Length: 248
Length: 106
Image (cartoon, rainbow over all chains, first blue to last red; front, side, top):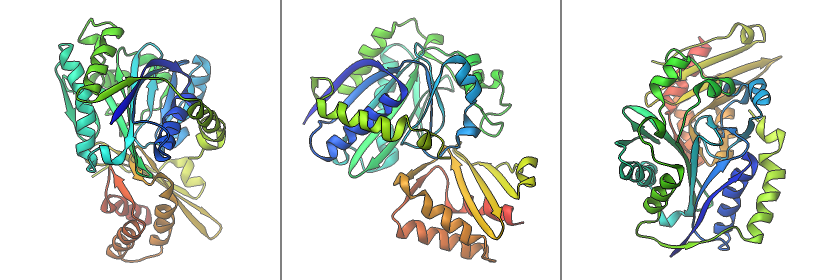
């Protein structure tokens, strides 16, 4: 099995999510290869989980003021602030039969790639079920999975740098979710690579690519015309559609 | 035991919001809205549900469960509906959600 690796690229929020779904649809139709991609968000964006309430999770006025986009993911999980310069996002999309059927085992395997990359950079990282990676007891990476029509998708983030003030301008973080619910409690619970390593973004990407592709046959590639067409359709139909974003 | 929050705004609107953070860190909110004689339930949060378009099944069952008097029956009904529809929830269990629903009833 040959996996496609799409090198780091920036897209806007709707297109990032649409590309994940377009590849999933392509794999379902046997027209897309299993794919690993690394990407960033330009402009910065908030993504919320499939079942989250937009008004409970996002400060829309703050987003507008800072030019931050908002997108509802098709995967569950929590709200994430994707700062253009402050994180790397990955997706791994493949036929379900290439991945463990057990949800926790699949998280452990794929989050394990991120842990391996961090360890290679000299950062002591640990996977914590269900879907987090911690450094020094603080979250540095989160992820979300879906399995639809026999296609597996996991996407996740690695925090490179953390602008907590900006994060608090765009996210509403409930007291129940984060004890105290203020900036100091966020800083006690979340960390970024910058606090533990001087590694450049390029070297982080190199280690991530090495970890994700180890033991796999890889072909470097980009999007097919069909995938881009499908992604543009999904941008209009779903990810840039207010009805979808405001569904809950 | 998670937290229970009933917002004053929701109370005026014949609505009730119950927020729970469950073991493992996932958070969910139940919004129970009453309009005339129609009661609807909305479930939101950072949990996982597969398939993702099956939330309507759970929310419909939860509204029906509000009419039951036995908590055990409600748990059984929701568990059966989830099982029959082949749904998979990660982040909380049937007991957590019926527990929140029963607090709303009380």
